[in-house]
Image 1 (tube, rainbow, N blue to C red):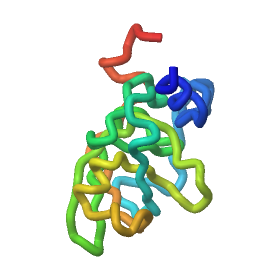
Image 2 (image 1 turned 90 degrees about the horizontal axis):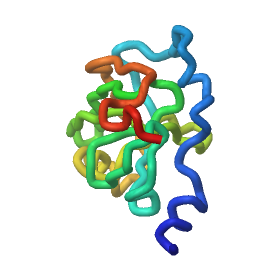
Image 3 (image 1 turned 60 degrees about the vertical axis):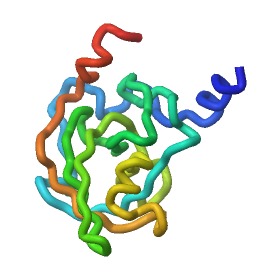
Length: 142
């Protein structure tokens, strides 16, 4: 019971009725194939909880949360201070802290050396645009 309360006391995602879930063509303001974003990370508090697209969050995996990018979008993230890169898949919504544009899973943040700084400016390259639909893993699940 404590585990369930931990996952529901502070929802990681917003309603599936967000504009990012509409069937209309989505306009991503200021986002092209390559841009800089302020990134942070999230982990233990949400490990095992559902992401906005219905997947179970794995803090050690390579995933990301963004407010509007389509689910399934593949991003190459590079942290300039370390020069290290990681590839992530957008499967969640957030961050919901002003000025932050991208939340990385703990595993992805660790791989590029962002853990010590907590927040930092990262280079984001869109490798592949996703759809606005849930991933194959979650189709048919509620």
